[in-house]
Length: 181
Image 1 (cartoon, rainbow, N blue to C red):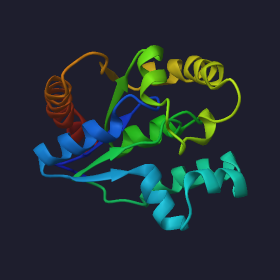
Image 2: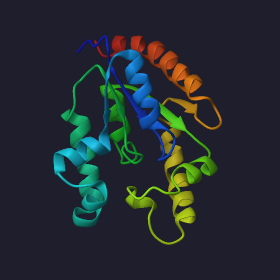
Image 3: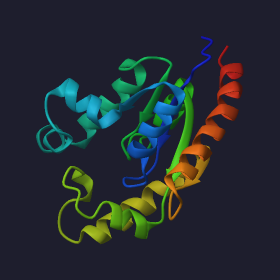
Image 4: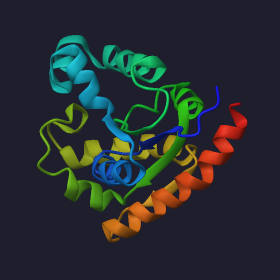
């Protein structure tokens, strides 16, 4: 499959800016913006919190796999991926086969601040939220580091982050298309 407009997948921990950056990058590229969590909620007719409560995390991870395997267009999209989407074995490779992957990264302090009032993140709910977040962050960070290019979103102007993502995407899209001819 030759794609001149391979999808851009933004991955990373909750609160790193995937949705915000994704919206701006999609606008610049003239691509559609998809948020994997939102797409799954729409398909399921219930929120992520409800899915976790009613079906459990393994069922939700299977829904993410189905979304990546074919629940969205093959090109011309910026996909803001849920924070845990690339964590299960084999998922990072699945996403890399579908398009260019860029990981947005933020310090644990920035993530704590940005997710402080979020009620739609089931894995960050409950007692001692900060400790839960730190533990999850530490467990996921090695996978995020394997994704490819990581872009720090701490204390940087949004226009600079967007320009960095666009620059990396444009460089990597040619290489990705060459590898997937």
